[in-house]
Image 1 (cartoon, rainbow, N blue to C red):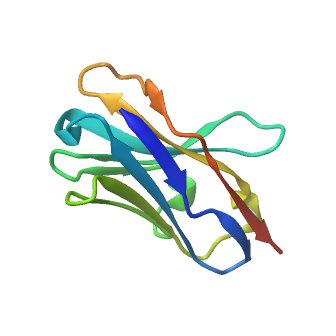
Image 2: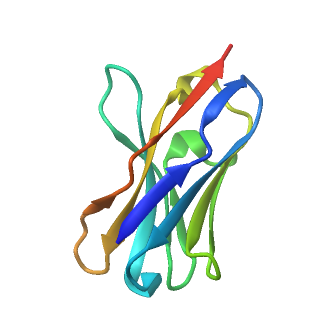
Image 3: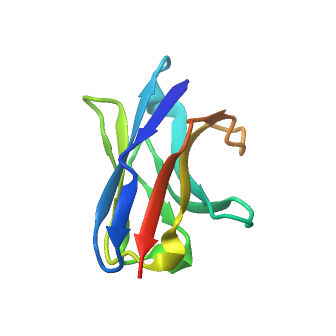
Length: 118
């Protein structure tokens, strides 16, 4: 699976941004696609994920109610809609794919920078 993340940018606190993760190379019906982020000097952390087969979603507590992950079956694209952004959301955001049954995200995109100014 090849993943291409895009949509990052510089926004102000309270603004919204939508990230895209375009997937290719495999049928995604047996994958979970996730978003992770890594802030400067910090470890990479899980943000959200979606199971392609049924659309079930997962979120880390800090983004619940503000971020929404979704998928477009026609375009093989996963979106992360981020609302009410806070400066602490500043990070490089990566999308990744986990094959069913592996419990590991083995496929990673190149990352897209999100910067939220206060």
